[in-house]
Length: 162
Image (cartoon, rainbow, N blue to C red; front, side, top):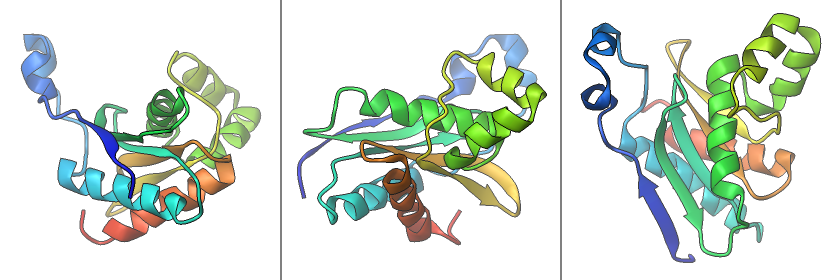
């Protein structure tokens, strides 16, 4: 396995928010440990196919939990991973559904396009606990279809534990 550059974003958001925002319920999320495990499993699945991808997890509000970008990945991979995660946090759907959602729902198109961090590429899966979104696992670096297969492998690795 290649060496990886890892960035774990552990700083509690509530501590950096203004006092007014602290009254809000924190976003639904999975643990950093499971986010790391899912990301690494997604990358390993792609590496087994000779693909170099990055992977990461965001919480239900699109806040980063964990991001891994392997050495040799293309320059945009980390940014695309986070943008796919943000988009899924807005739509509540897997990344591959984004284009169809915005093509068929003007209100969704407006909501998605109002966020400068959205992206319409496939390659990520929504993480749900008891039917409620708790985050999203995104992959970038291969084709959208390959990215999504690898993301699903990451989700399968942690299924039933979050």
